[in-house]
Each structure stands twice: as structure tokens, then as C-alpha cells.
Image 1 (spheres, rainbow, N blue to C red):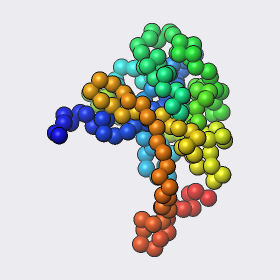
Image 2: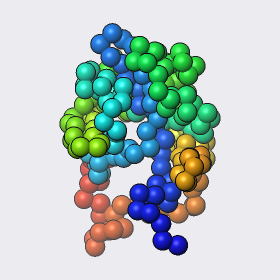
Image 3: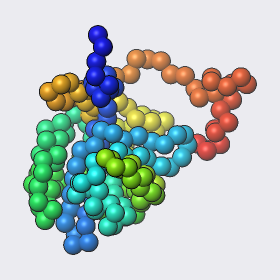
Image 4: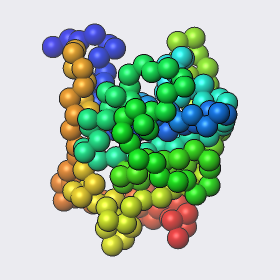
Length: 201
């Protein structure tokens, strides 16, 4: 089957991250984003693709900070309420019945009930005619201990990270599972050693 090129997201399961922001008046906004990714290993940058006109975009430009909140499948029903257009003066924590979590480094609060929080300061915005790429520098990364394995890595069976796969009519929400295979980074290199290993010490 040959498909239209813009239907890429129908074949790439995407994480759902809720981006929380505030403006100078202290009004809080939440919006779900799936076009987000870390920028290489082991940098502390994260990239988000955004439409040009969004309250999230305006708030990030105004305050130079935001929080990426990673949630489990129990937040699937919060995607549409936080994605709907609301007036800029509406507090979306109240609107979507979501609880705040105080951040440690920045002013913008996170979302209580997430399995991980990335407090970010704005690093750079790449502006294109039809979209923006937001680069954030993670200044505090925190995870809920109950979703972690003994080695500090994410237990996806417990966290049940919220993902979605698109179709022509909308979003099919899903999650991920481990398959019982783990390979060290060093396996990719001729000497079997990861050149970035000291970064993880």
C-alpha cells in the first residue's frame, strides 16, 4: 500500500508528553505533545515540534521555561481536554482537573501523577514558516521511585508510558512492553567499550 507522505505518524508510535507552562500573570497552561525527543546521547537537550500559534509557544517565549511531564496510560483521557482551544486566561490545571507538582528549579509547575518530569530552560527556538522547533535544556530531571527498577531505569511494565499511533481519523492510544532483550551501548563499538560510559558514572 502506498500512502500519503504526511501520514508518517500512523507508523511511528509516539510518546505523549504533557508540556506545562505559565505566563507572566501566573496563568498555567498544559498541552499534549507527541513530536518530542531527546537530542542525542548524552546531551541534556530535548526538542519539541510545535505549531506556530499556541499558548504553550507564547508562554515559553515569554518565560523561557517549561516542564515536560511524562505520564502513563491513566492520563489518556486528559489529552483531549488539554488539547482543546481555551482562552489564554483559563487555568488548564483547573479546566482539566489536573493536580500541580511543584518544580525544584524553575517556577513552572509539573503535573502530579506523572512518572517523570523534565524541568527545562529554553535553549533555542528554530522558527520556520509553518512550525517551530523548541530546544530545551533539562535543568532538573526527576522520576517517581515507584516506577523505577533497582538500577534506576524506567520499569515500563509499571509506568505504562502513554503513546499514540495515528490513523486517518485520530489517535489510537497505546503503551510499550519490554521484550526481554538488553544490549549494552558498548556492543556497537569494535572494542566493546562505550566511549561515553564515564558520563553515566
